[in-house]
Length: 283
Image (cartoon, rainbow, N blue to C red; front, side, top):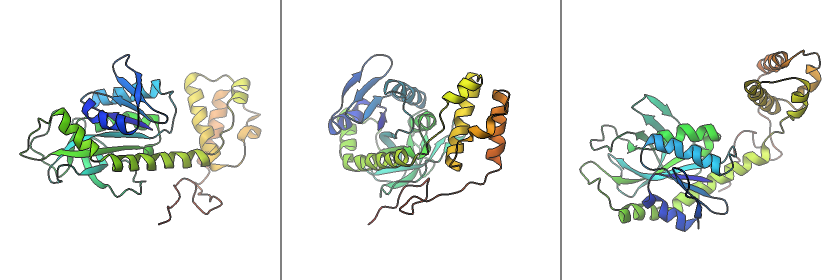
């Protein structure tokens, strides 16, 4: 589990709750780590948030399909101060971009649109939450992991007409009051991650392909993606159908052509769960 926060005041309750210790103070960002949780303090702003994600991805080992959770404070036009919300849509007005974090959690946390701005919001023109990091976080974290494992949680810290000048202690208390709910969401994301690990199809080894044909770095990435897709859609290794290929281009074109001819099929696990979606939790 990787946690990304903007402020030290937001980090302190999480550091204590998850029993984290300083993992790295070198470079631009301070990183904390525990047995299964990493945390980075990014600083304020979407650019720093994205850079902090890249930094943490590197120092934590660069593993893919790891849960990422952005935790922090946000203003809201209507919701009461202290409420916890989960971003249903992340909007970046500066660029016109938007993201839709998949709704895969059983959590009862209220969902809200989250608008990432470059200056503290005072007017709240939309009935949404407003922060300064989520878009940068999500854009980068979704490149490091599968999108359903990337989520943003915000505690409402201010409304129209209230002060934006919150003390360190006030910010920490807002996060501390929602620690149990934050931990529940983190636990659900970890559970989804474990389910994916258990049910991930076995991808054919690259070694025999690289030994037979020369692939550039770009072609190697393409090959990896095609073999992963093949593993999802087929129960066999494509190697036997590639023996007549003269070079790497032929191999890639052959794989792409065959994959394009195949409809997407949903297989079932032994318990009847569709491959590709988390199991339904019993009440």
